[in-house]
Length: 284
View 1 (cartoon, rainbow, N blue to C red):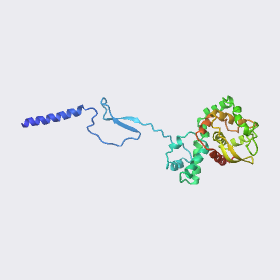
View 2: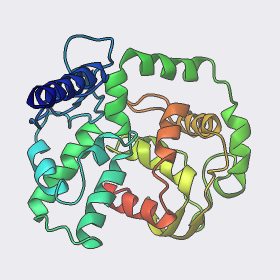
View 3: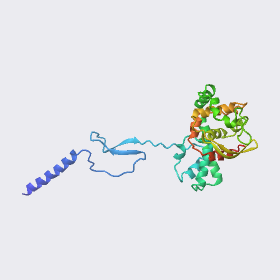
View 4: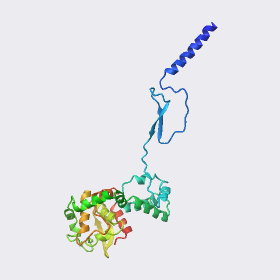
């Protein structure tokens, strides 16, 4: 009886061992360990003999770093309090005025505690690395080629687009004193100001509302938005008014391109914000 009992115990143990050895994917021993950030470990298929786990490589982590330059540390320190700096790097290239407005909004609307001097450095950093002009500098010859194409073989006749403007600014670009400011002699002056090119694009895209001063003459009215025009049409009419009535592009300022208009359109400013941008630029 004892022998029979011993054999039954041995048989049971044998069956258990056999069952464990034949069950696919069973991990008989294991432990939790610190993983590697950006990778994952999974149970291995039965056909693999390397072990119970295998690596499938790194996950793609799309988090572009901020560009190097003065002010980067301040941006990281202050902006990361409320949001990831990816919010900055994922943005399309914006007009310079956009970043100044945005930093002001963070302080005045959302209560970010950024000292005035640091705020100026943050704005300067953002404008130095994430604007239309800096994007053009990065793309180099490709953008220069696009500008040359726009100048030499325009696909849209700027003079025809300007028919939308004649009622106010007149065929000779002289405007109506006290009612509508002149474009003749004025457009190059605005283009010569840093940020002036972006401002002119914004005026056509988003309009302008409120009191302004131009050549010592005060105006208080509304410039309607022409955002319904295509990017190519806005670029063409801006190139037209920049080169008519003895106007010419200032040295170092290239022709307007549809790509510049497309990037500026993403800012979605109000007419009042465009007026605020004009004031900051000191255009008179």
